Image: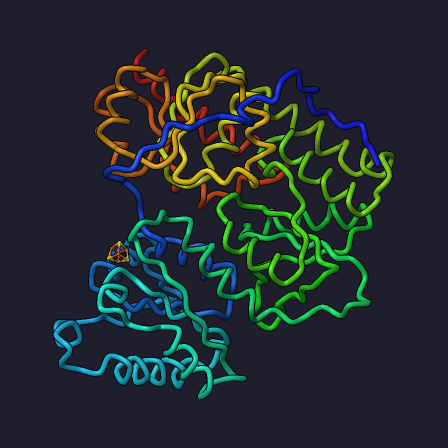
Length: 428
Ligand code: SF4
């Protein structure tokens, strides 16, 4: 079924066949523990117990801030010198900590043991620990494990590892169950509510993964069709496909075009008529177009350089180029997943410099030579670049802020236009 939607017709296949500049050097990224910050807010009765060092505890504590009015839902079991020297049985220690935690906190219904660099270095088998603890605490508490280590990973992979670990726990959907849409990836509740409302108005039955409560795990099976809401979920997607769910290839729901095409993919799969699609999306599309116009004035013609960090870089570059008329200098991504990025790549202008992986010194040289108006990068690079007179945007902010969907498109554009406006004011 074809539907008329305001997406520009393509004359070329953009960057579909791009050969990226592949770099494998020093990287400047956060580790996967960072994902706990948004995951613990989403799954409201889960607890994330990092099995790591004091460094891991500091990272997570300073990134998430202290929860003053609520009981914390993440913590660190510190591996100390005695454990590292093999003088203590780490498994016994871990069992003791977990028992203590669960006795004190009956509100915890799902416990993630989160691996770290230190736990991987001492080869602590957390899957064995999770299995053992599950035998003791299930069904009151489900115990799972995943790795948030920073060894060869980037910070959004923590969510991918967490969700992939959760997929085997999803109930099996009845073979006779009607087709259902699963939206995969952590979204702010406000975004989730808007997407639910739009899709339900089209008559599509849907669920979200991860759920807000651990007892609401959605069923999965051959009748499940899933859309990715985040571009960094390669392992989760594969785990769902292994459970017979079918992936719907779509661009990501960033900006007016991305959101429309993302919804359109679901609408086509579920046989929604063009009239119904138009009826449901016309109002939000008009509002979004109007709201984006304000930011376009500030952003158009400006150049932007992406360092590889969040894995959101390619969809963001597509939005900023196609909807905000920005010039792409370099689009760096930690990993290029060609299948999940196929529609996004086709929408990037042919000839865009795409880099995969990082060699930070070489990339900084290129960036300083190119002198872009704006750079998207990790926190460690932002200050030195600002000192060189380049406006920066922290990549991590784009993961913490609700940016998906129609109503958030202008907020997304604002994240880029505001720093440029500020620099202009300071220069005036
Ligand atoms: S997991 Fe590794 S990279 Fe992350 S805070 Fe701990 S030691 Fe550092």
